[in-house]
Image (cartoon, rainbow, N blue to C red):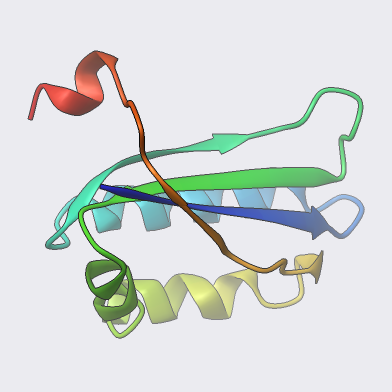
Length: 103
């Protein structure tokens, strides 16, 4: 299992629309091969930033997801909401407990 983590910076006032769009994206990802789970995080003390955590079986599964029409549709909706779309960083998942492993 691999984790992909991206920190983005939102345009002022775009928080609610960005979060709704990303929730839609993550719900759509649930039907994607290789998706394990994820989270959207709002860093304490940094209201203009968000952190996206995705857990995937492989990087290839994540890459295939980027070709999915649901991903592309949400990418279009996110355009203009972020001042910095960030860069994805990859991490080997050493441990992921809780309901994520109950699949």
